[in-house]
Length: 121
Ligand SMILES: Nc1nc2c(c(=O)[nH]1)N=C([C@H](O)[C@@H](O)CO)CN2
Image (cartoon, rainbow, N blue to C red; front, side):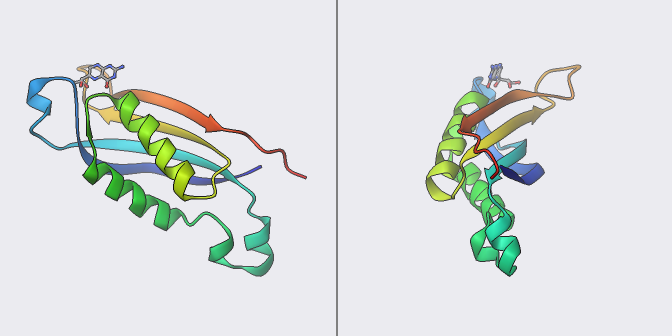
């Protein structure tokens, strides 16, 4: 299995369990590792045959702008489901960090893996 990477993508969204968080936008930082087979695209140098990280990043920005949830867990789970529905992703690892949420910690958050890792031929 090959991997396409999106690292330290910053997106703005409404997120948080406390009342004061319900009326503000906060920035989340995302790391995304996407499992795919890059060989068909590499063989003919065609963006249409791989996971377009620019298009996926734009989709994540739209997702963040449209969603409003309490937990980073919910954000991660729903985003992973959306990406697996809309792109040819066999497996993904998604880390969602909420910088500055806890005093003394650079960031807090979750990391999830979904789907099946395909072996390379
Ligand atoms: N496991 C989690 N713990 C907490 C979350 C969360 O989303 N998942 N959220 C908060 C608050 O919103 C916090 O980030 C505000 O600073 C607390 N714990």
